[in-house]
Length: 305
Image (cartoon, rainbow, N blue to C red; front, side, top):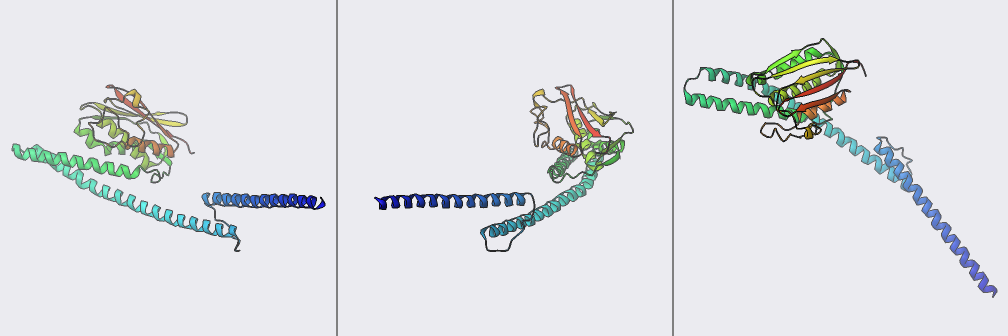
């Protein structure tokens, strides 16, 4: 009888010991997992993990995580360098092409005015049309390179807003002349806190759209309204307008309205404008009615932020 009692107690003690060992081992694993998660969070936060230089599993994991982080940083640096090279290349090529394209367009227009032979006139018209297409694709290529948010790096400062708007109007002047559209600009001598080059790109894209989607012989009006903290620049056209159901989508990347499918474009300009404004604490609004016209309102800060 005593033997059975002793065996019973031995079995109970073994069970308790096994339970304690399992529990200790489980707690040890949980601690290691938690340490691993903490180190992973440090890596994701960009921190370097301190190594203990021993032969423990924890040290081996830390060493490998540091190696992964180092590889990631090297690849990220190489990717950023490659992106900057591609951006610079596209920008330089686009600007280099712009001048000869403008000259070809000008000389072709002069040639068309002087040609009397119908066959020569037809060929000159073809040159002119294809030059226009080439110019369009060059502009869209440049916008596409800018559309990546990482490329948009603004450096805001107090700028002469009238001078920026004037440059944007000059950029689209040829497009307006082709359609006999009058650009009416009401200057206000306002100072805005914004990046001059990127803000010029914003206004160029919006005015370009206003010209593209307006009938020949109409007008596009640009005026500025000064508020307490913001300056509102309105670009008002007499174009085809935007369907009400689509007005919330026009700032999406590559989105194009259902009533502009017959016009050239990739849906990048307004997306780019919104991203530039967002990065310099500004914003953009649109008011539009079908076949009546569109008013685009660009809000720029007039104080340091």
